[in-house]
Length: 288
Image 1 (tube, rainbow, N blue to C red):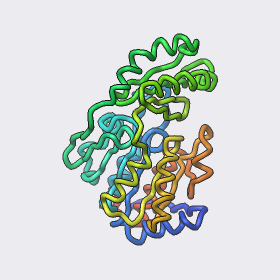
Image 2: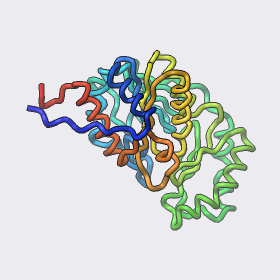
Image 3: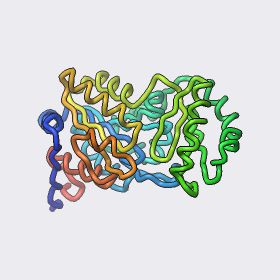
């Protein structure tokens, strides 16, 4: 006998309520898209030690077969997100797509391979100059640089005063990025220098159109997810149904202010996915 179903929360906006109703009415035409860090995985001081919440893969494996598609959209390299998420070779996730580097890379579970263009030359140039920039700023103590291959992320979470280090580095890193044709994506105590032209909003909108979805639910937690929120709002204005979910954080309030539904971080996201699969009648392991 299976456990009782989780209660599905109600969005606070009429647009969100309409979007959720469309997902429930026609799940085979719905896309659920999710950020990784802060949404499927908790935020940790060392990004390499991040792992998907233990309930993430089981919840997605129950839900995905009922939907048009599930996509993970992240600033991380696609292959790294797949490894840290434990998404490869999971029954039920055969058609999962991971859009890494804000959509510049794509991993499909069907092929198990990553498709990606050549790296932007500005990334290598910045990598060479960054140590000097950090030294001159005086804010290098405790700052950790993450080489993402197609982007460089400067984390201040380990610094003695993380927010002060973040503010000190903002101007010199913006100047460095501009000089080499890159942009800066600020986040939760991280400044990421990456090529322009792609963001989570572009990646999400293109994918929704590619698969022919009529509804989309997007969940994120950070400033980089604002572009995806804007894409869902634009899709709604074009006639598609959409739900905006904020994986709640006291560090970022902008998403909560625009969200149709706020949940309590990754555990809340997993509870939402589980409640959706319960409502749609997906079998639980204990029921088989």
